Image 1: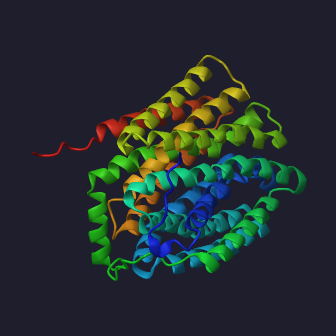
Image 2 (image 1 turned 90 degrees about the vertical axis):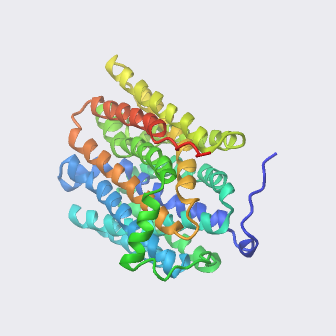
Length: 403
């Protein structure tokens, strides 16, 4: 029987789980919906792969850097005004993406889009800490993540058909409609959940104090490192799979979305496993299992590539295994990194997000720079990230309690 996880009584009137899910869903949709269009952007704008990769990499940089500002802003002024302002920016930037007449304008618009997306995602993480008891946070995020996993499953399929039927601009039209709906829902139903607003959260002294507190926590790093490395492990597929599947392995564009969806369905499977694990195991124990799965996924992909098993199914299976590992790692690490900080939840969520996006930016840049028409760059990077992820939880161990 599934345990009911309810928000604190003062927030029981609001559909918080639905709103949190919709806000968190914006990030995967923002990256995955237009993946099938990346190869056509190369030919359409007449630019190299590395330039088109900037539409992903600059999104990641914008998303990550904005969290360092958005987190403290939401700690000081509240979650609601920050998320509504961010959603308004996202809607406008998405329209600019769809109307872009050059790759430079598209890259700049994607950066602005990332700033707005960041506000929604970061605030959603902080709302979990505000409105639910800490011991329920990981379970709630795992439950929301099961629904969120539908975005990277449905998104690429829809994006593939939109690309074939209407071209790359249609993906941004769909994102604009979705974000406008989320903004309307938040405007009507999202309450203010920050009951501990910190007037010093945005001044330099208070900001520095909060950063020192969060960054000095061993528990923060114990959760953030596997979460960031795990996200880097799936971002290499987000940024590289369309080029590998379509250009290297010859998968038709219309079928790319199905291949990507099969791989990403591993994330849903992982979140379901995570929910079961957390019934009997601690977060750290679940992370040990999840990071072992990350290692297995990376080593499998590298071994299959070295053995010459170059087939779309090999890439999809590697993606499935990596996504399943992330489905275990991410809900636990996300909740564990924020839960210890009742008054700095926004700052902790922002720092975690910035670190994750820094990892993703490095991974995306490496994928773009090393693409050589083979599977080797993707497979080697997958194995390296899986190994580092496996080691991270085991090296950043909690100090034993002093008797």
